[in-house]
Length: 55
Length: 395
Image (cartoon, rainbow over all chains, first blue to last red; front, side, top):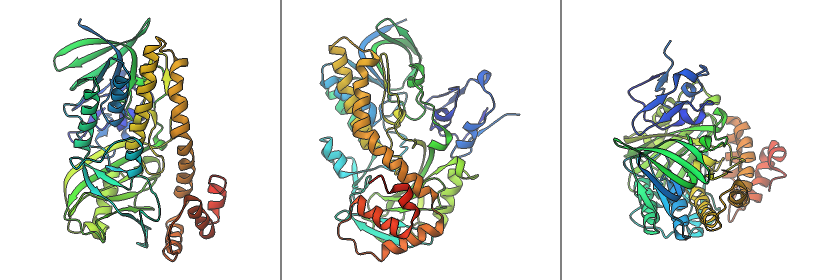
């Protein structure tokens, strides 16, 4: 997952991740990429388009 | 590795966490309140509105340090701009009493918890937790130090992205249709018709939610909206830019701050406790599904959580069965009303822009003296017969 520079770490992505793979820190996001099933729900809810899936 | 022992560990120092910590400490428990952020209350993720009645019910005296504006009414605006003005004598609406300065308010609530005896740890992140025979051991990080905290009860007050509940076996994942994406500018240079009233804008301006202007005194206001991603292909930010570009009040306004955050508006979660674990606030769905407001319910639920946690510690029984008392109180005091709000929201979201305009038109022609929720629904049914199906049995 690519986290854009403008991410504000609000945690909305982590709240909807069905596999709880996202850890939100004060100024960073940590994705557990191994468990990701590519559902992209986290991408779709981001209010500022700060996430994109690396192809 | 260093191990700290405590009765109650509260993770997250928003209003829910601070209230839990305060009331657990006041009732005799040893309490640690931790937050991953370096500044409690910042960045804000909220429109900052609370009801006067809510604060009064909780015994919290309004303080000029954190009240930025006292409101006297509400303006409801339909998609074509038809507006309905209601003052606080006519109708008691939630989130329509004071506008707070959350960065100050949240710190005050945490200070109250500290004065009650809680230990506060800031810039401290919970990384995970494992079950111990009489509680949980939580792995923590503060700056470059790693340590563990053993707690008989762990309270997850860690917001809509709650991991504590998940670690404790609770289902806290929010479905996308129940997660409202909130976004707002704090702006200067607002030109409002009445800067003592909050404004709500309904319809396609904010699919799945609504837009708002919450005045903060002078020409300053929070201007924002909440959308649900399943209702639109645009981001919340795009909708906000469109709203600000079109709204007459913001034509000469400039942003000084951008806030974002998810709002879990699907109602209160079914399960709030497990053995040695409780969840509270946004983590528990303590957010009014209709308005998205959650400060008062977070404080209220925190009070119940703290009281029950302290009692469970005294009784040396932190089992799920014992902690269920908190869940029952929340259901009665908060959850039941949320179910009505959920139905009302479902009805509101079923209305087209033209139906909203017709309702606003009918309301505009009505002389309101004092209106109850039931009277409001009767009027709605007159204008929009499908309100009878959706709301008739509720009020």
